[in-house]
Length: 496
Image (cartoon, rainbow, N blue to C red; front, side, top):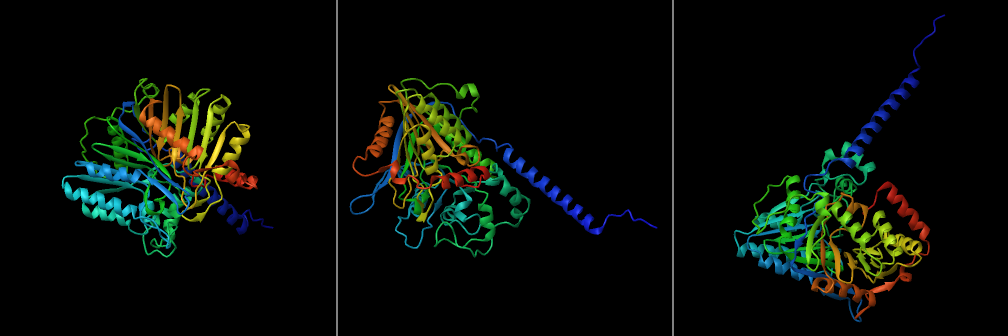
């Protein structure tokens, strides 16, 4: 009697499927590991030396409830216009959101168009003026349509560089591995048919654009540089963001060369032609750990340029060096980075006067949000510090408290860090492109006094009800949001 040694067809099929699935898993795991740990493009995570400050100024935009209509104080946009009007040789503008997309109800000034008009007018006045615009794919909704204001500038002769976010590390490797393995090869352009998440009046979007958006990576910088002056800010050139509360630092001097070098790095790795832009000083060599730890001169106002992961390190240094009796004040749109949260708790335990003003994460461009990440983080900070940390919510209506500011106030000298970066993993862990400036100055200096006055005004509700007590947004069911917050942290599938 013959006995067949062949395996049944069904068993062979199961084994073949298992082998195929195993190979796919290995490929996807390899892709995910590589793009999570790969070397960053040269010139990112930039940290400059300390430079003497020239004409450094603290600026803000403030929205707040008023008796008859929303109150608004504006300094940042006017400073943009002033700096552009003084430029004769070159302008470099790196801006995350640069568009006029708003919902049908509208009601926003045409910030993006006005900024574009002023740049073009300056190009008309100075035909040799070089203009470089660096931005993010979000303004074309990831390739679904043209970015109107960027195309206007390109047509007028400006060099427009769209940052290559594919070259950055993947913040959500579980999804991005699938996207890189297959979806990306189909591109994003074509006839859009889906509603645009930016605004209901914005052009329709292809499904492939949304699939790219789910990688959640961005050039999140907000920087304006000319041969004379620089401004780094938390504000976007985005009509629907016009009334957000924001801060900025306006500066000049040798640190301009370092700020420009950090922007040229984005142009280089994104494949743009490198322009020759004259400056009165040259950028300093890349900092070693010993150089970066050098202290600024006491009694002087000094500036240091920071991008990406360097922002995290210097932020932690500031918090960890804050001493008992000093003030550590933070105004922040998103606070979620675990290292910073622990450092703030440790500072409060040392006797540092810790005060936080946070956005309640209640809305974004008219859409309701559920308070993540700030509300569960706030509950944690108050609980773990036994309420030694003081916390107030900004009193938002439909706008956002979009500020990104850390201020440590000492008796003799103070420091601040301000710019584009939220205090989250996505903004500080070499995932997004970010730009901040660190200022070290005597506490009595104009820039520090302006920052202190700004914070105290919001905290004490001088002239208006800027902030609300913690109880105004205390969660009735905090465990739900704590659970969602924990799941999002684990899966890394968040916008913060």
